[in-house]
Length: 290
Image 1 (cartoon, rainbow, N blue to C red):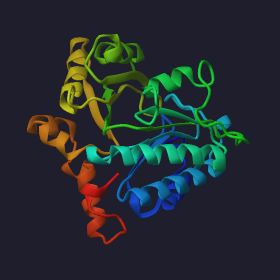
Image 2 (cartoon, one colour):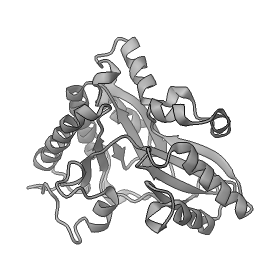
Image 3 (tube, rainbow, N blue to C red):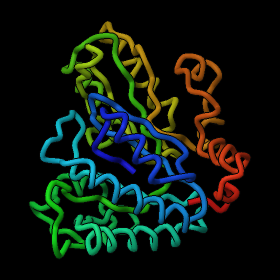
């Protein structure tokens, strides 16, 4: 779940507590002013945790006071339900639809569907472009909650979110590299990318979502950014994984890439689910996860 808060530690801690034992990872970014909460385990437990997190978020965050470099639609900005096994995809779609209906009716937050939860299979970028302009919410709130905005709710395969931070504050270069590598402008298949400025670090960043891992994996995408940066006389100073990645994708990466990027085997979804199981939480075995 993507939440529009990345600066107030006390709020992030409260959201993690609300989600409870199925919280596998929390990644917060000051400049994006955004946090990604990865919840995993039994589908029923994850659904309940997502609702608790969302309710806590809208009580603590007001979008009217929000600033940040990342695009946003609402306080609880994106709620993707992901099946760790293809056979559970229909269950994840059901969970997304149930959450979207609950969000509108009980939380007062309108919901736009995307991915396989949307009958038209529209993408998250489609939602960001069209919401409230050319498209009404799929689930409108009878009594919209002031300051909460709306949510994009979907079902999708696992993706990887990763940031490549340049060694300089050159937003034009970051945007040029993003344009070169993203699919919509003729770049790598399944890559969505933005060039962003990080005021707190005095750097620019290429922020990517890799949404078709079978076509473009983590290593290929990051190396493509590095090569384009080097061609312009810059370097990638830091690779930052946002959330977790599937173990199958980690297995595809080379030792050289892992050494350069600093990405650890402990950063996989499966490893965190194993940790939860070993700690005796109420989460189930990874194969039954959502």
